[in-house]
Image (cartoon, rainbow, N blue to C red; front, side):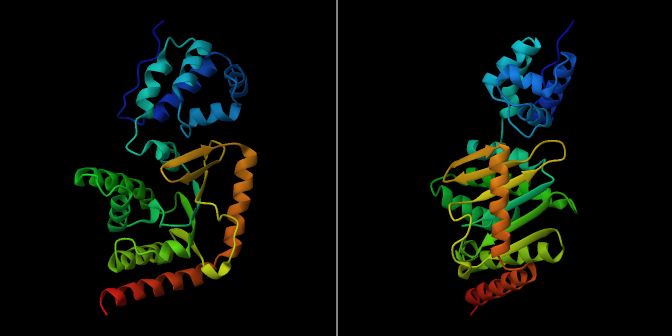
Length: 279
């Protein structure tokens, strides 16, 4: 009997790879937990592979082919499924973000990607690598704008962001860029498309002083958390870790300004930046 055909890289390869994994597992008569035990991973991890929220690594693909008798199918196709327009350390998080139903994010130093304007995104990317060719900067900005299109849907995903005041005070791209960026966030807030709270300096010490945080929930897969540093990032699915960091986010929400006060602060700061640009 012929095996499954190789995947078309142009048609959501990770989702297709996950669907093929589910088909092969069910054909073998294995539950997610049973398959996980044979691969020395959890059933939850298998479920995330099937849902396309986790990236299949080559070693895992090789073991899947051995256990499921799929004649190298997963080894051949995991490479295509791993191709991404995003930096390696962020690719898995960006791809999971696109499938999330709820995203909770704390941004300590810059406006997060889903809330950025094109001008702000360009300023950020140019700061990341001042020697990069303009074509490369353009590609990075285009990738950022593609992520932002997630918010074109009127209700999904639910995006709840806590912005540190430091991210709003740091002039990225100059006063005009900052004014536009803050007015954009205020507009999304007024249209009830996002939930935004500002964590002010006078809140003092808080639960996430060590860095950025992104929690993602999905319709048919367990939640994930993404933690990021300078050119490094890690997606985690350990339930205890996710629960602990969800508590961290809840504490941030409790320390931040209420939503209406945060909106007023964003609009006031936008006006201040405009006055600075045009005294």
